[in-house]
Length: 290
Image 1: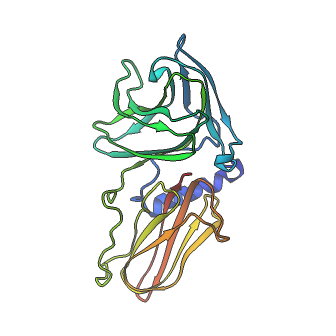
Image 2: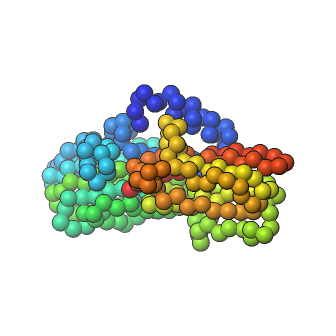
Image 3: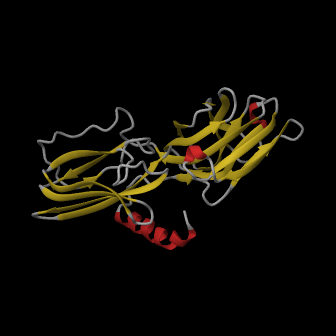
């Protein structure tokens, strides 16, 4: 995010929180646009060797910044090369989904385990997901885990295989698992009008390349449903017109008003409904990862 837009972004996020406290906010999001942040890259002394940096010109990310880990020597164990962010605060009994973008310049898939770990000795691994990164850029996830106790935990990526290569990581996202994750988004009976207005969290979230937005209208209303970037600029108008009472769905294909694909990042979708009896407005955030 450009620094010149910092203040307006903060104001917009605060306003959205006040308007819709129950929305599924990003629990964690790192796109490396502002550098390494709290990330730490470790190469086991005497076993592995390499260097890390922020790469701001990867053509597969359309010019966005990413974390680049150049591995000179991979070591003899998966944990000899690891990228991690310290102290992600998790809540007991809550289920979390991890997504990320990655690629490698290796000849084949590279082992990349995703770990929720104790941040101090004995560095207990609470949960490990076995995974591989392909040479073709992809979005990986969701990796779902239910936290058993309130804790500050490290989110780790173990980069193994004992081979020299370069790995790029980007758009690391952690969200609370959507309640409708099993079976997808199922609309109510349109013939039965809801008793109240409502705007649901888009699903899937994060998404690539498309996502579905569901909303409820308690009465027939004139409706606008728009997508904005974090600078408040209109990206796409999804609906503008009269809409009957009931539960409805709209799909966004990740394109802007000129039918061009938008870049990875956080977007805002806002619904405004004007009915004969009442009006309703709500906004949520969604995450596009490529």
